[in-house]
Length: 281
Length: 122
Image 1 (tube, chains in turn brown, orange):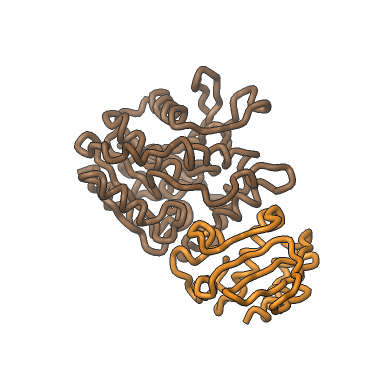
Image 2 (cartoon, rainbow over the protein chains, first blue to last red):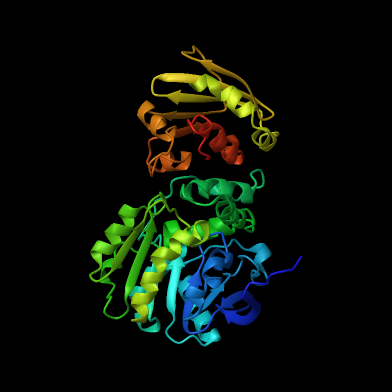
């Protein structure tokens, strides 16, 4: 039996974020234009494993995914045990820009899904000069809460089980079983209260409805790709954002759900590669 | 059709194992028709059709018949493929002690999806 190694390299990076020392886990593969990947709420950078393993992407892109603090193999900062984790727009923005500077990324392409897609809209509005292009997956301007978020973090309900059960229907019906359950496993592994803390940004603090139309795609091209079966950020909501931003390009991906890069990499790459081609000119 | 839930769930050892700490009775309303579904350690004990005079249940799931029909179709359309999708569209009302529902959410999703014709997973 022979082992096979993927081309992905993972390292731990130490840096100060928001005035506190952090230890973050960063993965990358490939060479070329940096492609910085942002994972969904309550998950981690493993969602981009297929992009990092696809030579069609890595031949021309340096694909980078970091686990946000509290997520995946990144630790929360010292003192976390007496805090309630809550992600805000300001902290999320500063985190991404700080990580970019620490990695020396010059005008990367940004790709973010769900909360990553939402912050992509914030960055397109507030920091377009920092990016070559921005790709928002499952990116809506706002999502109303549709269940009691307190169920995500209480001692008498298993946080990992309930998080995965809540999002399971967001995986599209075409997803291969192995990729569907890999995606849900990441949710089952989340730390206590982390998914809930991310949703503070997604459902409350990160509402960008009032400003999304101010995004100027002449300063940074914006592409939105959304799965047909996502009921958290519906195709209609993505369409509404796209229609309000001149120059924004939108793709609705049939049969896919809320985690396209992780739940169904083959189909997703069929949609993503033409976008990367267009960005590279 | 709802009566077949007992055999369909009890024939799935993995689902029963998942529900081994679940013992409760919940009320399912399909339009005007109500059903009491009793579960003991993951096995469905009984599926009883109403009307009831004083039904006792830990929680209730209520949706119009047309919505359940879409949910129980072979390939449900977007927005009808999952209990949470129905709740998001405000067509499924979950009421009562929802801690039991949420703590065992995967069980309830997979159990109710058993009523789909080709057994499309939850």
